[in-house]
Amino acid sequence: MQRIATESAAGRAENQRLQALAQKMSADLLAKQKEQPQLAPQELQRLAQQSQTDFQTTQRQAQVELRAKVVSIVAEIAAQRGVDVVMNADILVWSASQLDITNDVIAKLDVLSNANAGK
Image (cartoon, rainbow, N blue to C red; front, side, top):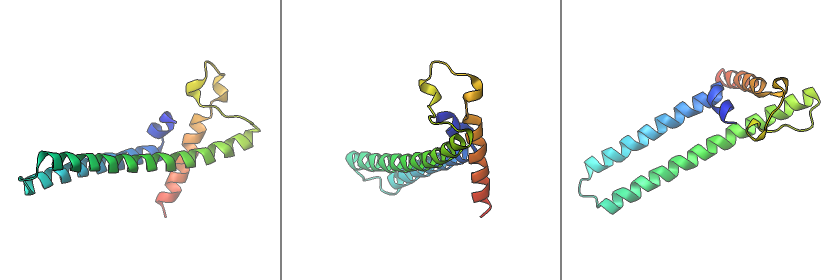
């Protein structure tokens, strides 16, 4: 799953969006600190923790959405190939390289992302 998240167009776009969000949240927190220098350190810490919690929630939601797309694509590829089980490569000790469908999943996810980008 990690490889798909880093190599697919959808995964890269989501990572860029999350990085931009993290930068914005950090800038917003710094701005609030400058606007209200009298804020107690505890309040600043609470705001920073809330910002981090919000970011983590957004990050988890993005992961759930990407996983749902990947699961759908994996099911489609498995059905096309007549495969009953698909395993995460991270837990395998060894497998023949022709059994790895990661590149196919990335390709289909990219096609799906490009189709959605055109809408």
